[in-house]
Image 1 (cartoon, one colour):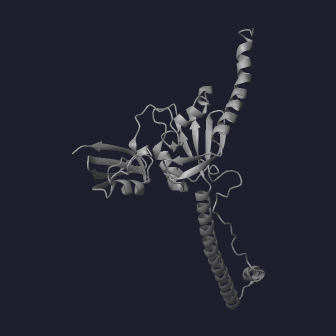
Image 2 (cartoon, rainbow, N blue to C red; image 1 turned 30 degrees about the vertical axis):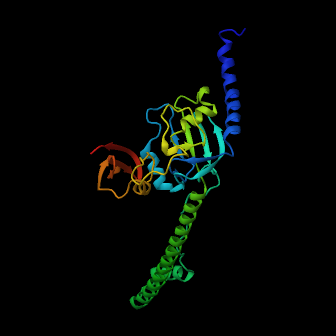
Length: 300
């Protein structure tokens, strides 16, 4: 029997081994498997942070900011393949279609460096002659020639800047395209470290149930929705409910043309409020950076 002093040390040695075994089980269950996304995924390795133990697992303003800055790699309703599961000390990485652009080796800067046109030997010599020359007429002639050479350098610098600007736009477009093609990821984060109880496929699926359709039932304590049932008849226009994480254009397509639109500031964020009329009442939806963060329904 282990003594009370030895037992904690033994458990510390055992925990990494248990995590490794659990990571293998998660890999076997998820890697190579297609899933369907319930929200748009940003085209960055930062992905979407989910805090399963928090009252609000997803920080929608931060999520919206990543969508705005990195674009959408996987749209809501699209299918993606789970390409990698990685368990770390305080998070579980759930990588999709490559895990997101910006990993090691990915070009993230669009800057193109260019140096100014150097002075020619003639210009350098004329500057020396100008300091030594005492004759006013000759000094004036030297100065005029120097001014011409400097203007020539300035024109060359302007042409170089235009070329650089064009090259940077090409790099930006290339990065944008590669972000779209680079996939994304969920990061299941635990502030006190990943508990052993979280390292089962069922718990991971439960943590992501609001954001990912795994194509099978999960033990979520909620009544079944006819919208997710393959036997359900197609809903009439304006009869479906929105969901947090939808893009603005998706909400408009779902709910129709908004009756009212307004905007206000919440700190540094601009919150767009749109009101939609439905058969059962009115939906008031709030968007940050074009992403639905919350909505309310009222009956008329």
